[in-house]
Amino acid sequence: MIDFQPISPLQRSWLLELGLERAFLARLPQAQPAVQALAPAPPVGTSAAAPALERAVPPADRPVPSAAVSGAASDVLSARDQALAVLRKSGARPAAPVPVEEVVQRPAVLIQPEKARDMASLLEQAQACQECGLHTGRAQVVFGSELVAEPDWMIVGEAPGTSDDRSAQPFDGKAGLLLQAMLNSAIPNASIYKAHLVKCRPLGNRPPAPEELAACRAFLDAQIRLVQPRRLLAVGHVAAMALSGCEQDLETLRGQVLSYTDTLGRSVPLVVTYHPASLLLRPQHKANAWRDLSLLRQLQAQP
Image 1 (tube, helix red, strand yellow):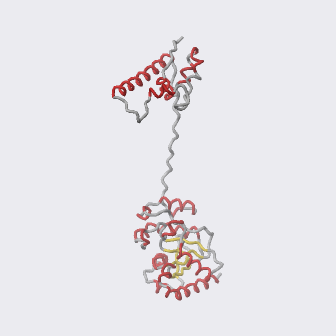
Image 2 (tube, helix red, strand yellow):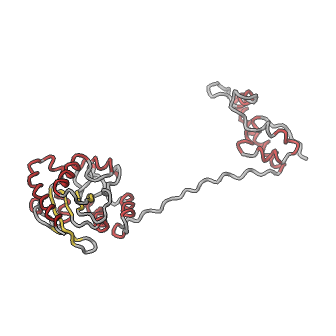
Image 3 (tube, helix red, strand yellow):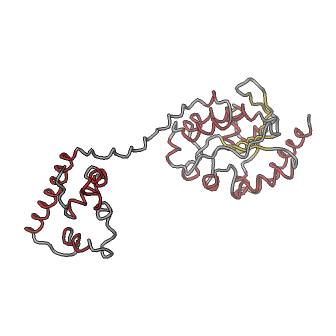
C-alpha cells in the first residue's frame, strides 16, 4: 500500500490543473476521506484555504523581493515534481484531454454563373466572387429584388448606389422611389424583378469600369436565364448599351423596341430609358421618360 502524504496547496493546484486529483485519490484507499477536503477551493476569502493560497500567490500590487520570487518559483517546480512522482508510483494516468472541436473549412465556391441551376446557387457564387476589385469596397452584394417567376418586366440598372449597398436591395433610396412611381403609373399591375449590371457598389458612385462590367456580366446573363422575364427595361446609358449590344448614345436607343438574346437563344423585347437618378438631376428629361413609359404600356398590353 502506498504511503499517502498530505499535499500542500501548491501540489493540490497542480493536480487540479492536470485534472488528476480524483483519479489519483481513487487509487489510494486510505485517502478516500480526503476527497471532499481536496475538492476545488472556493474563491479567496470564502474558505480556510485562502490564507495558504494568498501566501503561495501574492497579489499583483504587493512588491515581492527577487529572492522571494526565486523561492516561490522553486516551490512551484518542487510541488509539480512531487505530484508527478506520486502519480507515477500510484500508476494513475492523466485524464484524457478534452478533444478540441475540429475546424471544418467550407469548400471554395466555384465561380461558374453560366452553370448555376437556381437563384440560390447563383447568389452564393455572387457573394463569394472576387473577380474584380469592387468586392473590396462593398458592404454587401446587391443581387436582385424579391424573386418573381417569369415577371412581366425585368428592370436593369448599371450599379448599386449607397442606399442599395446598405439594404442589399436594388433601386433603393430616392431614385428607387421615383422609378417605382413611374412604373406604377405606366404598368400598375405588372410583375417586376430588379437587378444591376454589377452586384457591388463602386466607391464614390462612379460608373463601373469596363473590366468590372465584363467580370460581372455572366451573373446578369445567368439571372435573366433563370428569371425568364417577358420583357426588359434598361435604365441609363451603360445598361442600355450592355443589353442591346449597340454602342450608341441613349437618345438614339430610346423610343424603340430593341432585342436582347439570352444564353438559351431566346429573344427578349428590350426598351431603354433614363436612369431615375438622372431624372432627379435633370427634370427636363421627364417628358421624354414619359414617352418611354408609354411604350412600356403598349408592350404590356400585348399578349
